[in-house]
Length: 114
Ligand SMILES: [Zn+2]
Ligand SMILES: [Zn+2]
Image (cartoon, rainbow, N blue to C red; front, side, top):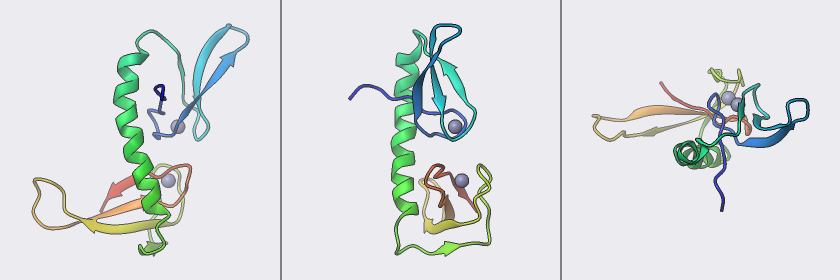
């Protein structure tokens, strides 16, 4: 599988897009306005963003899990979606449990901590 690129703003997959005027290849996000020029530095960036993307994919699965509680008391800070899944998990190196929220917008999947 070749490297995919992920949006720096929202971690969604970037899709290749041709800039017909400048005749260059861009990668564009369909979730926000982020675009970047395909360039020779992308190998390094792909590795970094790939790891982030895989984590995002897991979190999107969490958002689709019907067994997890949902709340409409919070809003996603990224996309303003009014519903989120929440769960408790312990973070490495921290005492006790932390409450995590995952945005239910399938195009977003943003996670944040209480
Ligand atoms: Zn984006
Ligand atoms: Zn969101």
